[in-house]
Length: 414
Image (tube, rainbow, N blue to C red; front, side, top):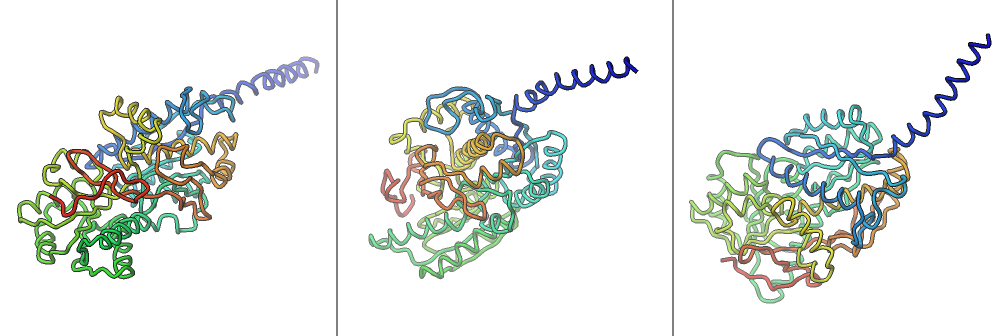
């Protein structure tokens, strides 16, 4: 009887001794899932995204003199200095693969949060899986407006959506008209996934509201082998402005086909995506002098906020590229998530969600030209002010809105 009691006591003591170790092990690192296309046509986006997230993790896990959440301490002070560990998953631009990989991240890798996804169509399924498991999801760079309107409690987006971006475009058109520029007609050109469809719908509605005539509204098949018929329609319409919503490969094919068929619009004002990608300008940049794209990030901000230039230099050393509209949003996605986890002082999904709901980060403590980061009841930040960027002399300069602009728009494009 005594032996049994002794064994029980020893067992209890051993368990008690192990508890602090287990607790320490649990909080020694915070595991976050990052899901992107790392293979297939969009693989470069995944490669660039990985570097953006790694730079953000480097800043969070070590001490940096930046006016950025978590930069000045090593690790997450709210969790005893725990470090962020990122687990990357490849969704291959396939919503069903995204579903499976998100389940793997949650059930096998034991992530406490997920960030992604580049393609909005993949974000639909990834966010649904996160919702089912009560795992917070930050939609870092998805711009489809419908994503935050599905009643999900664990969905958050710090960046603008396409209705906000499109409104910025039409504000710019209105301002140009007041200066005497002739802008009356538009051609909309968008791919057929949720990104292109939502973008086209937003632009069509705004055109009607603001008094612009849409001469062509063309939806094309994503990753189409030919766009000749569509470009012929655009050429025939000959609107004052062409407004494409296309990913990189489609964007390259569009520009090449336009050159082949001799279609030269006065202006191209693009819904970012492929038109913010270095790969597109490497391929057809010589045909795009003066193209305008909406954006979120402006490297010009470094003149007012020096840390933007310093953090960009870190990213450039790692990637060989400057931050762009996508990688800057990805970087901020991890900063925002880690800040919430730190304030939650927990890796519990519900507690992280509560902290995300309470987020209020001043714009000056970001690398973005935003007022602040604060989420509404649907998880959307409505204070993320878009910018318009024009490709001039091999680089982008900010031309709108007036408070962020460093140059006047060149119109028509060359």
